[in-house]
Image 1 (cartoon, one colour):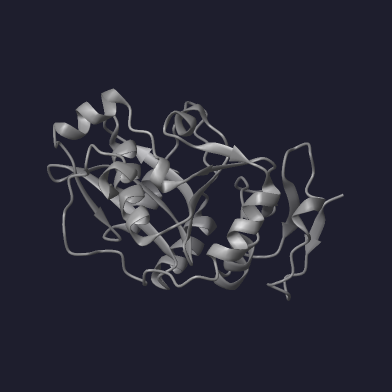
Image 2 (cartoon, one colour; image 1 turned 180 degrees about the vertical axis):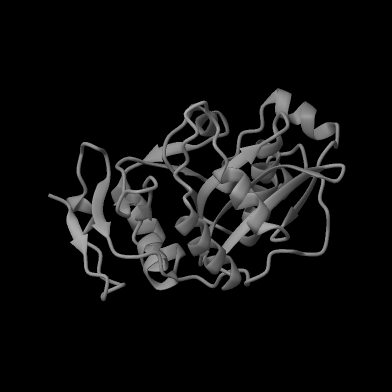
Length: 244
């Protein structure tokens, strides 16, 4: 059986080693989506994921998919796209639009796990400088982006969207350049997808993730507002190449 969380205790999560093997990573249910509980969850390698009408479900899969910002893989076709300089990228300017674009149904079934109470919870995280967005524009149109949570020097990717070919990849390129510059240790991608693996994501044991987060989440974060006032055209170099 999975643990039912006490709504009065927002810091107490079960040990991630108690998560189920099937479905992989299901750890607990219930609780709430307050800032305090969400931050405590992420620090432990736990995240919420549930459908509308279901109780809040908390997950910690093993193994875990992560992306090390310095090891982002930029394919030949993506390099070509970046050289065209079609897109302008900003950060933390339109968090609400980004999360709602990510929440829009992407298939004929019309389903989404980014339900209204999730949107409200992450908008509150954003207001407190904990959740951040990357926006990609073509002309005046918002055509791609992503959002996630920052604790210390760890970034927890939540979702991305693309209304133009490669727009979400461009958002990730800019994010990785920024995170590498700031010395971030990893992006937690949560679930394995072919899309992420082609961009350089790897799987690591959950135990290793938890050890890394224990160190990274204790480090100072870059600050609450990631909008530097500029519109960027991401480099076609990998973060490692740019640093070298």
